[in-house]
Length: 509
View 1 (tube, rainbow, N blue to C red):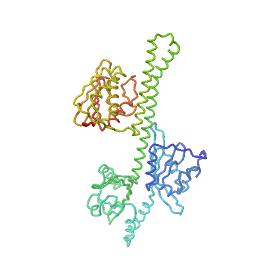
View 2: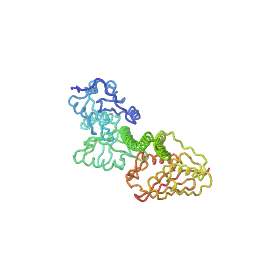
View 3: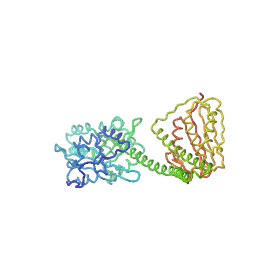
View 4: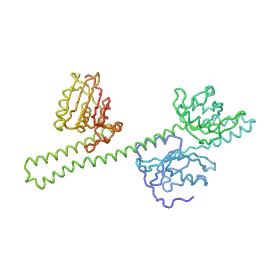
């Protein structure tokens, strides 16, 4: 079989995806063959030990020729396998492999393409199982059953010692189950025979299994193999893969079923999908951050540059009052940029887990007076805030730093998204062992579609218009509330303001 003539002499190093180290650790401990194809470099970037044991090759040894393993694939099936290796859609194929000792093995290979948020193909993960035992066992059983002579001992030697489950079913009942099948369903032989087979299937998979069984009985096309869950009593749920053939059992039609435990394989696939989802989320967050930062930093930078240019060109001729106004504009713009940088750094600290809950006795009314004075000093609009305090005469155990981030962000949002002539209500109360904060405004409100994403990083309401903001504040609030063992809820209608209710664990000191 010819090799691609354009292949470079040295492989391009595939960039590691988030979570790939964990996935490789999982892959290293499963019996299923797993490898990763990098479509950018056209190379196999990773092979697990099961792959290397079967093929006698590794990703490193195939660096110069990623297709050399195809030499072991049956010549008539190589093109189909090559197509599967680069498939951008999920597919499963079976094919034959000639082993070094001359034996013929049969593999079932599944391709799982991993796409990025913009649809680009990041990786193609391949999972392959050696299904030679199914083909061989099926042939042996057919021969043994057809002969019906002294084959009972041979039959039992085959079916009771294989590492896969074998079931014989008819009319919805289990007629025979080998030891491995009983192990998979976690029942004894008497229980298996006493109940309909469907009772061992997970309820969510009942209809699929029954439909496939009905179609097989009617001679209709049925997937050669499919997967379902089994569950019995308090036993853990397992994922099994089944293939079945019709045959005659004790003079009546029956189904011969082969079972494989694919729980670890399914878990590996789920972990890979989670890693892909995480990669997509990180990519989206990066894009949002770049968009927000470029927009939000441009405005204060423009104000600083404009003020500096005016001072540089005409500063000596400006009256003192005008110079003070320009300098005040520069200070305000710098403070705004500093605040945005501080929020980004705080988000990073929260994500890295370096922010800790550290409760200490706090006299809440005194702390509120101090905090409101600081807020009014930095924000003229703070005079619109009406504060009430109830049931907080005694000190409470609270984290002053976390509490400050929650209150300052919520109050600043209430002021920013409401008209300058409308009030903002801030009520603080001690309720049992909790500290309750309620902040209400009469501003633009929050559209219903935005509520599920309200506390996500860099998410901003679709109705904010030209109002400045980074979309970080409410994410910081949610993280701080969680650290303070609390909850946060929001009630809002577009054009009718918003009310945030926060409950924080803060027992009496």
